[in-house]
Image (cartoon, rainbow, N blue to C red):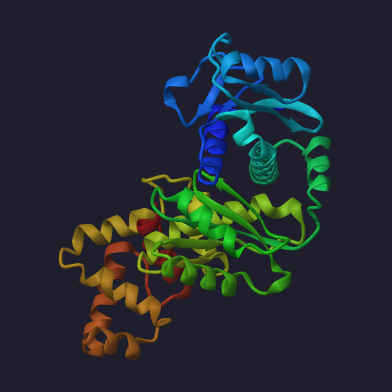
Length: 367
């Protein structure tokens, strides 16, 4: 497909070549219009010399005498810019032909190299967008994946049957900056994309655990001045489970940020129960299991009972260690647990009742 020179690229060619050649440079598009120049007054003018180059497909020199009779032209040398055998524009050097003729070919070659560089960058960016589209489809497509998806995966040599885990990296409204930094630490079989939740990495687990990778990545981001939070779902054997891993990572980030806001990395394996509660509760603020917490909150003005229950759970129901952590006597602990039972109807000393009280405390924080 034939591509033409843009104004931005034309001015880039002008600036680069004028750093080396001591004369004015003009770049004309496929219609002979000056779209880049060291002389701003000549911008957007028709260049008759360029029209001759486009017509004949070869260089065209303009003498002082000819310039006086040609519209928008000055003495100089004009040369075609080729790409894939087609003329995509014209580059012109202003000056007497006999003085600048030897520089013309060098400037033309430089212009073609800059154009090819732009095409290469554009193709790389386009490939990156298509790769990101593959990730978007993996994580968000509810319908069965179509043949186009698998064709793209094959084109980019993506092995869909490697074990991977979904990682979310988020940094308050700085997702583009995070993406630039994350790209530096991506391995060959990793996939990535930017989604509303943050930068998502589908990390291949061949090279090690997701936890160690996430911890190292967080350190690198922090060293770059970026304060981030990361969350990981579960490892999936192939592409079919990555949507599940991504949802787990999202939910883990949500509950982890509320339960342990000081932490920077949250792993689904450490938050399976709160994630399950969040998913099943469906964000209902009046969930039935919250009834126990609301009762405690109503009667516990000093928040002693909620604190006591929290520590008692953290210490696995060990009364002695819980009392020491709370700096209270064992009898005081027993009294407070009796109060919890009388208010909620649930005895913290019984496993089943303690589980319900644990769940109500979790729901109070994550909903």
